[in-house]
Length: 202
Image (cartoon, rainbow, N blue to C red):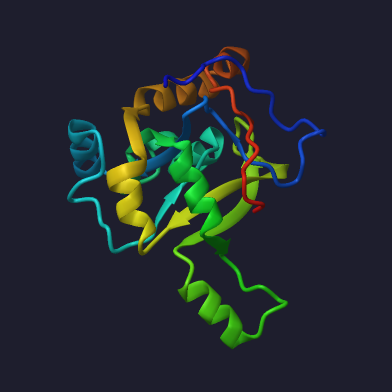
């Protein structure tokens, strides 16, 4: 599935406070990650995540293109985020992740012991952070981040990933346009992220 690079309206007041927005079709959904050259090159060569990708660490996937750009600074932030990858996952895998998730922060309705048991039994974390505009200003609504750990990581690396694309050149092109004040042209290059209705409430 290739990304649709039409414009994406940002900051619309009608956007719900928490809503999954993504590029997706009937079978796959696109998420983003940023890595160093070694991890990115190995993933692109093999079509999946292999060494030196670490299976022992939590790995965060982000359906929001602009949140990924904010996190990685258009690929210029630091050496470990120089390469920005678009990863098309099976929707079944994405839904599995949501169904086996819990918030990244303690549930106030649970005791500390209950929360620890729940967290330890749940391999996926959900975090909602302010969505960003082209200048990385925070917007009123949130973008989802999904942290994969434990059993979720090999499923992601070996089964869910359908396609990996290096979109670093697109990130650099957008950065140059924004620096030049050509915001209308930059907006035409943004992926179209549509509201995604998940089977699991998050």
